[in-house]
Amino acid sequence: MPGAFTAPVGRPSRFIVLLLFAVEVPVLVACWSAKGGVGTTVVAASLALTIAGRSPTGAILADLGGDGPAALGLADPTSPGLAGWLAAGSDVPADALRRIEVETEQGLAVLPRGEGRLASHRAALLANLLDVSPRPAVADCGRIRRADSAAGIVAGHARRSILVTRACYLALRHATRAPLKPSVVVVVREPGRALSNGDVESTIGAPVVAVVEVDPAVARAVDAGLLSGRLPRSLGKALAGAT
Image (cartoon, rainbow, N blue to C red; front, side, top):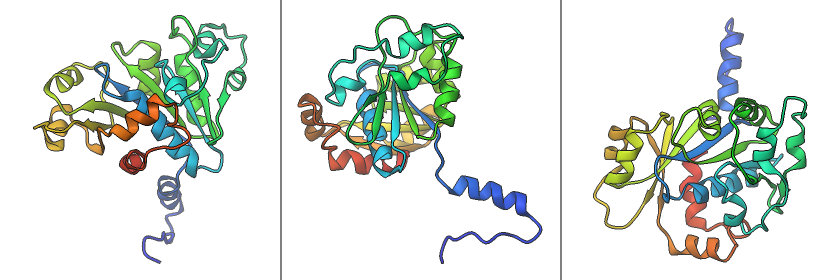
């Protein structure tokens, strides 16, 4: 069968390593931006929905940006959210995250941001718990200004750090000054922009794995609160390369 693995004789450990990379395992993916208003939340929520749809265990969306539930058409959560969990002391059990989840009908569980400051002293623990969860996790880290912020720490610990950016001079200018270096880039492309994917890659120093065209259908789905129930086909198809 094309693409099938054959275990090399005398090299079992190498085969196991190759197999682990070939099989999709739950990991933490972080979406973030260096400039506001580029579409990070919609990309993160859509990516989480796409993963949840093909994962037998569903998926998690950790909303550190604050707009995840609204983008998905969910009611405003009333729980303390991630802000409350991050601010808690070490006596709060790790499984308390389960108690603040908001379930959707698409197999996606949302960890809402909550009110108040996102304390950073437990952010690394949050990232580790999401990374080893039996469910794949996508963190919407919003705009990151500092690497030592809670969102910056989560994005820094993610196995796949996705910078979401527009293909414009100002957005790329901010990206070059970002406190983190992404592993890959998702470009939200507007009509008429002159900068190519190659320009983005050479400026940021990371490969472009997906291009999301600005689509009125996506805006209508978000405005109507229908993103979680009817993910626009163009969006799901475009983000296939980011997973």
